[in-house]
Length: 194
Image 1 (spheres, one colour):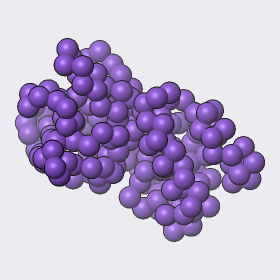
Image 2 (tube, rainbow, N blue to C red):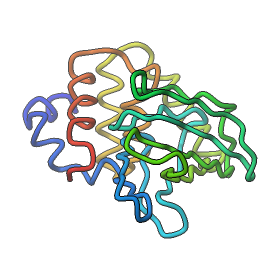
Image 3 (spheres, rainbow, N blue to C red):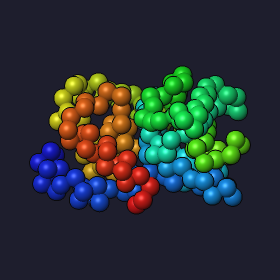
């Protein structure tokens, strides 16, 4: 697969990908946030929804944030506040207890431009136990070699499994190889622009 990646070039490969991020519009405030990872899609019930194949997804948001909140079953379980001078920057490793298979977790994000009560709401759903177990086994099998991670990323894309591809690309254990870093940077750079 690496040969295909090198032959196509980074820009062409990424042009073939489905949209990589969700732009989340916050009600009437006109403030938006761009969630790159975990992979989420805009929905009516919340601002966005994503099924996560790992229990501890890495958060990647394009905009600096003033506040992040995590709720489970309507109860706050974790929060962090930044300031305009020292906003919360991502990537951010999952800061709360692991997401369980089938569990719904509400992630609330407030970018710098938003008022104190304006949050983007991202509903994260733990994948099935089997999917989480197979993802964990895959990650363990990849080791430290960048080639294996790149191949697994491309195979996930070939199958149309973008949530898995993004989970692999932005996983805390992803090796810091030039190719993988370039892919991460390009996905973040493109953000929600298409």
